[in-house]
Image (cartoon, rainbow, N blue to C red; front, top):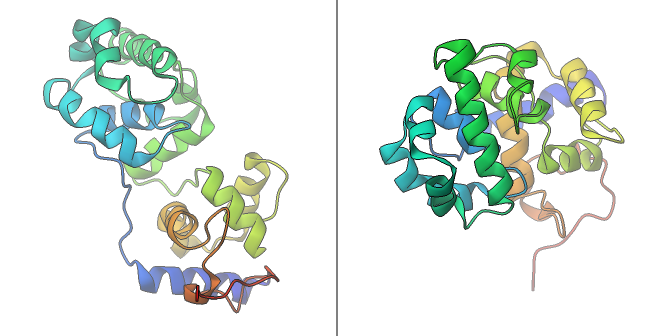
Length: 213
């Protein structure tokens, strides 16, 4: 996709959703980190249901460690892989207390050292909590990047690197959310809704779908 087309691509997504935000519910950077760790292979809706009551009583790493893994599991048992995720959340909370006085490091490498935190999770925290122009490539962004021709790659890191390269600086702050929302609600996995896509004429996807009926 040529630079002018890339800029137009983002401009249209921006016009549709000027101030995109994460659909995960959180009250502080620590809660965001926990929510993103829990969201791996799970929906934001499912995570929000599980954390709504949890975040009423747990707002800090210290409170999470005091809660303990067994009681945490009771809160998140509706989420896939909850046993492993609960253990990771308790472990990372202990590390935050020990090494960062309960704070959240504003550094990708240090975040990735925490149990259950990969590059995608670190990028989400840096972008959403700290306003850094990172692009976290999940399944939606990977699909949108490849399908539309915006950023093709064989794996998430390749797509991320391409997006970092082609995304205009003035669009980088919100690029992550624009692409996720587009993939979640329009450029869907099984059947993209091309008939209501604002970038359909820019997208290289050939078998454009038609409205039902």
